[in-house]
Amino acid sequence: AAGLLPGAAWAQKPIVLGFSQVGAESEWRTANTESIKSAAKEAGIELKFSDAQQKQENQIKAIRSFIAQKVDVIAFSPVVESGWENVLREAKAAKIPVVLTDRSVNVKDQSLYVTFMGSDFVEEGRKAGRWLVDKMKDQKGDINIVELQGTVGSAPAIDRKKGFEEIIKADAKFKILRSQTGDFTRAKGKEVMEAFLKAEGKKINVLYAHNDDMAIGAIQAIEEAGMKPAKDITIISIDAVKGAFEAMIAGKLNVSVECSPLLGPQLMAAVKDIKAGKAVQKRIVTEEGIFPMEVAAAEFPKRKY
Ligand code: GZL
Image (cartoon, rainbow, N blue to C red; front, side, top):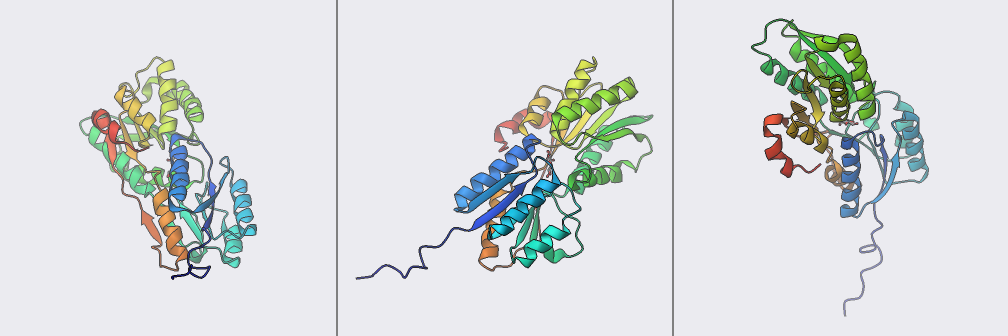
């Protein structure tokens, strides 16, 4: 009779993945966390998850703890681009492979991580710029823009600014009057927009927000100032989360550029490939679209985040 396979074959120990998350600052982030947790469960991967409340020192602490626990793989979404060399060298010395998700890091030694999977934020900024140039093609005179930037030093904030400016610099009528960080949150987005409105008031023609949460906070400030969002002030934002679709359907947001948080399945596939000794692409880019308010109602039922 066929006996049981010798121990190793079927009693495979589950892969242990340590994940350090930025925080819970936005709808995008909570959808990203949900995707990672559900994909880990689906993949039978044991997930050790830590929330850094948007503080780099908490992410570094979490990564050090994963190293001490000898996890199989470490993955994280770096809150800012710089300051990671030391802790990544410690992971390398401990022979624990590292995966970057969502945001990248500025390191000279590319061997400090196996792969970076996430959106092309410069392209997201270009898409926002192209939509605005097209919308304003028949407008003469200055187009005065205020900009709500994401977290200072983060890859999305740096790159979304870069991509947007690359496109609008083609026409001198586009002027960025003020640009300040709202740290990707609704509360800060509202607070900074109130300051912009106090300083510039009716001069503002356009708001470019680096994420929907800040745009939604700014919409409240615009209404409290007695102005009509998406009419008196054209509003462009990024992420295309549920809140953005609701705002577009209510006629308060003009367009949202998609930035998919659904990285969980790709992350788990990469983790399994790494553990199986398979080669993994150094850069995995998520394909994304753009959603103007005119299509929001038709698209909304299909949205997964
Ligand atoms: C983008 C992600 C950004 C989102 C924000 O991939 O890093 O962080 O655009 C989130 O909503 O806070």
